[in-house]
Structure formats: C-alpha cells, structure tokens
Length: 300
Image (cartoon, rainbow, N blue to C red; front, side, top):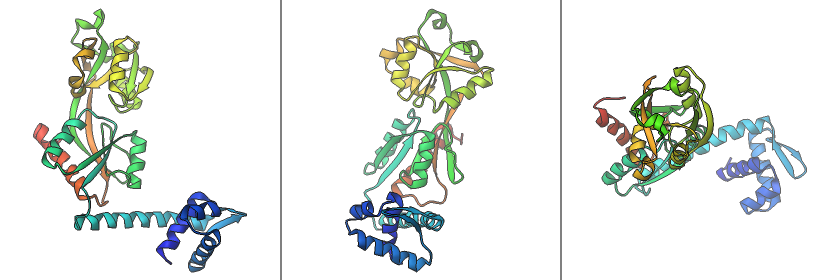
C-alpha cells in the first residue's frame, strides 16, 4: 500500500467520478482505475459501488476513508513538528475569533515581543471555529463563549462588564444604570462583534425575566452602533469595545450600567487537546494565558 495510492483514493472518494478525479490528478483514467483496483486487492474488499463512470463509497470505503483522513492529519502534524524543529517554518499563527475587543491589544503586545511572527485572523461563528480547529485549518480560537467539542480545551483570559448600548435620547441620557427588565419591550440588536451570539443575548434577558425581541443580527460593531443611534434597537457592548468607539459615534450613543442581573462576558482561548501546535502558535497560546494572569493578578 503506497502513499500515492491513498492520495488517489482520497481524491476519487471526494469527487465520486473517476474521469474527473483523473483530470484533477493529471493522470489517465485507466491508470487511476488500476491504482484503485490494486488498493482494493491489497485491502481485500471493494471500497466503491460502481455505476458507469460514477462511483460511490460503500461501507468499507467509508470506514477506510475516515481512518485515512485521520492518518493524513497525523502526517501533516508530524511534518509541521519536524519543520519546527528544523527551523523551516516562517513562524505564523492562524486564529479564528468572534470577539475582537481584546484582539488588537493582545496581538500588538505579542508582536512587540515576537516581531518575526505572522498573525492571521479569521472572523468565524462558534460552529465554524470548531470545524476549522478539527480540520487543522486554524491553530487557535479566541471567543467570549467556549467553543464546544469533546476534544476542545478552552482557557479563560479575562472578564469584562457588559454595558447596555442605547441611543442618546432624553429618556436615557440622565441615567447611569438600569435594570434589564425595564427594557423588556425594547427591540434588541445582536451582533457577533459585540456579543458572540443571539443565544448569549437571549440568555441574559431570560435571567432578567423576559425573552428579547431581536430585530437585527450583524457582525460589524460600527454598523450596530449606527443602528442603535438611529433608534432601531438597543444592544449589549463589552466595556473595552465601548472605549474603542470613536468620539464621532459616541456623541450619538449612551451606555448604561446593568444592575440586575450582573452582566459580564469572559473572553477565552481554545485549542485542540493533545494536538501538536507549531512553535509560534504554542508561544502565542502561552503568552495569552500569561497576559490573563497579569491583567487581574489571578485567573478569571
């Protein structure tokens, strides 16, 4: 059983078409068919159901493919580890995030200490984060809700207060705090850049005793701020993100401290348990955890 045979099998299984697979692999269709047949002979059972030029994995093929892809992932991880040891990697970290309020300051302080490392950021939902971690497409996640999965390790970094973002109207401007229940009849705006999901918003409102009326969901904090300023709804905003809003938009908005219930958001970092991380990614992970200690003097 040769590595080339296995790569060819993986391509045929993905395309379910022998001719298309041959074109992608840049070999002749008869040569590809012979390669797959030899692989089936080596294993001892057919791996495909054949219908003309179209083929489909049978139950043996599905089992074999699942184990094969895990093996390829292990090989890729081994290659990354060897490249690290040989100092062949350029030093890069790929990070998916849904909450960007702490990301710029964390990355900037890290790059001051490690200027040769390259950071790549991807804005993703929690579900997409998990799939990207599982596939090895990204190294780490930073989010204000734990990325859920049986093999995910989530470490909290720090907690911050959630404020209520409201338009600068007479009914709000004279107030500094509010009970969330007072806003039960208001429309809410949910945004990934402000608070990771509509589920998180709903959970906070349900603690206060009501189900929120969500009128809009988005992922651009500036756009959401504009919508709030126009009176189209209210929203939650982490205190650090509010500090980063420009004065131009702040002049049209107002924030209130929420007294009941106490509303906080905890930002954390996620990785796959026991999977090898490239040196740069492992250094960033350790650095982020260390900064969590520095921020409060103890773990959140």
